[in-house]
Length: 205
Image (spheres, helix red, strand yellow):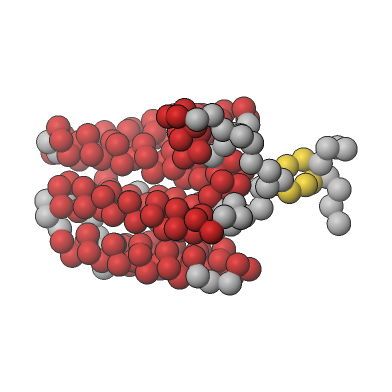
């Protein structure tokens, strides 16, 4: 037994109104260190993404609207990977509440909008890319969510790898957008759906 670590599923109270809804969406009780890692990680990875897009020259071929969609998708996926990996998000989205599973699946399903925006607008109406990734997302989400709890992490990793490989070889996109599928499926199938224990340092350490 490890005495230097403890698991805490305790969810702090949240305020009413919009502030409370936002806090619950991000994960109540986020620590300052978690927020710092999120902020630094988001800024650093967003700068890397922006630099890569600029270097590729692809941004100069997109319309203003397409560029906005790509930028928003990038920020959402980078921030979402980090946010959904925090203890605060794990406590909230995997709490002992019958409504939690429905909330997780609704959250994943809402990201069909991302696929539609990328496939039908940025990729100029690529219906095959959009439909195939929607099937991978929804099928993968069901596979992870309804797997036995001790298998959800490896199932999520298997589906993530399958989705990335399918995108690389059968659903190719311009090199400047190759980051989208790995971050998209990482955020939703691994960071959001896998019920990992919220680990903290032991109080006596």
